Length: 63
Image 1 (cartoon, rainbow, N blue to C red):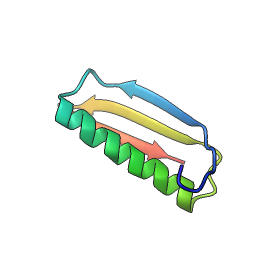
Image 2: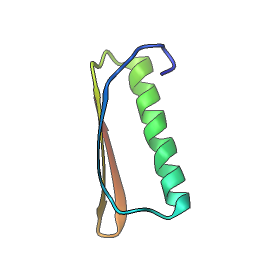
Image 3: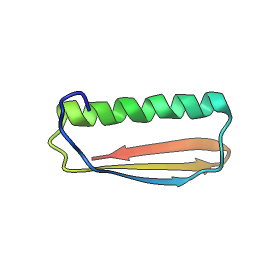
Image 4: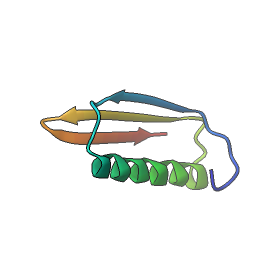
């Protein structure tokens, strides 16, 4: 990431394929969250979860 710090990332995706625009938006949201973790936290790992709930994509990023 931006700081050069290596952080293992665990991803769980329980979502079916998304429309291209939604997939691109989700990618950039997750990328920004992971960049912020690398820059601003002392995390030893990050967890990313994606799921669809009532027709909406829910993305959770934890450190």
